[in-house]
Image (cartoon, rainbow over all chains, first blue to last red; front, side, top):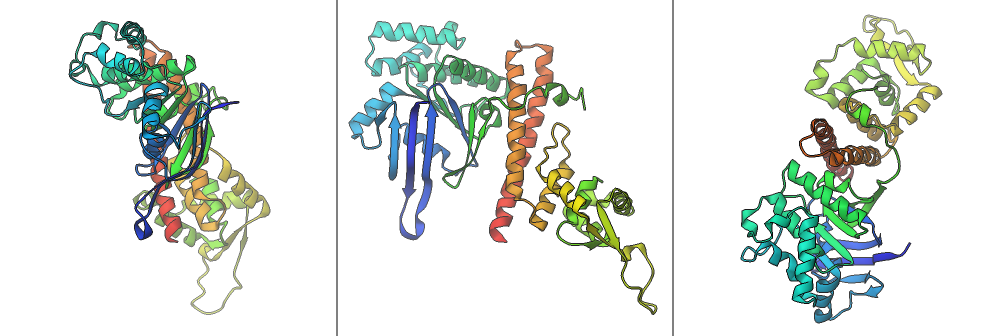
Length: 243
Length: 180
């Protein structure tokens, strides 16, 4: 299977000498096209740094990153910025929507930055808002929406530039149980539509939606679980009906 | 008291019944205080009948110091008992979660070097995550406000609670391993 994203020996260190911190320490990651991968670990394990490195928000200290068949760790600042605009979509815990812009303006912005025409960007944004169930809220300001709705807008925005890879950092971190379920449904839809997704989280619920779960500790991968396939048929027992 | 727990505590070395009781009280704290003093002996007798442990009586000493008591017996695992312990180490006990059993499994595994507590935690986590995935997919398929959705949410929340506790187990055993 071909990888959309792969890293080899990816490393990010801070400081030097005695105070050297290995935030990401020699990580080999392969994500296949259409796959959802979740990376879990305690805070400080390096999972957010990893996400920033593969998304071009931070620079690696060593190792390689290949995205959609291209080596991207050696790109110039300018080429890296272009890569972020055209190939990657981001979803953050704190939504990071622009409060001065309406919902639909927020969603169409990445498409505009990626070079689409205003008309095409608007059409795409309208379609995405419909997909996340917020087509009636296009003209509202983000501040008028609930946390769950804002995160759904943020997901729509992440898809605006038709990225090859969506990166999500604790996307359910600020949401209650019902809003979490909405976002989980949305990620499930993306997955079914063939979107490649990497999620870093400490929320077991969103991690459990992934095809593959990687545990990270002290900057390195320590365990990997394939969640698809395997045992099923436990619902009755889980509900206390059997056993 | 689960038979396997007592068996596993014997895996490190043969013990007297009172030593097993002391070890359990230490591992269980206030929860162990509710344990009936005779419980361990009931389990040991059952294990002996099942051929999983053997007993040895000390040479009868003479003099007033050698009070004749059941506590004087030393219990040891038979090969069959050792095999049962090894099996138990790899078993996953959900969906009937027995926290005490799992806790003592980690304690016994570490004490006797039977298995890495962290790999037992990882195995258990994999299993729980698969079940969480299953329950959650069922929950997502329910329309908003469906009655069944509420039950499924309860299952999801309980699985999450178990997974959080596993995280705590992982932290604790990681620390103990690095300081030992």
